[in-house]
Image (cartoon, rainbow over all chains, first blue to last red; front, side, top):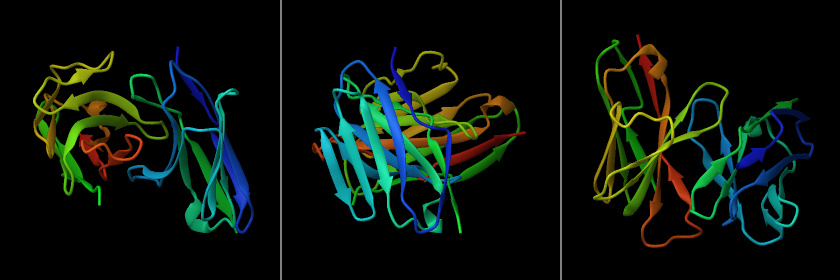
Length: 109
Length: 118
């Protein structure tokens, strides 16, 4: 079956760095997405990786290793507004998104 | 660009009534639209994939007669929850992909519709 694993909840301090991991097992691979979702709102796109390596976008970076079925989202200089759920999703061979359960990130002052 | 709207944002209805939710792509044409449901503290659950001009493809366990999907144009898809019951109360989110090919088949999400069935 298809499976996406990510931690349920993480806590970090304002100004610090946090890494949210995601491992996946899917039928085919056409890219991995990270989305941010604030409570009661729809997800918003953060990043897309289809090749191995690190993609940096401001305070957020995303890494992919296809051979290991592994990705992480790195958030630097954490701000209180970064408190949200972070969803990892993999696009399978049918171009369908397979979603992880999300990681709730709590930022403390 | 790539804005998706949903209407209504929230709705409260009595058990047994039907509710229609609209999903519109405002500045692009969407060949494919997706309907998701999200219960509190859970991830998105894909309900169905809707292609313009054809019947929707429903995920296993989703009743097609209860959740009617119509994708009549490249900018509009509707989800009708028929004979709604309290267990249908959830956050319904649509997304759309840009038919022009866009970058990496990214799905653009609407703001969601919170349905509460009394």
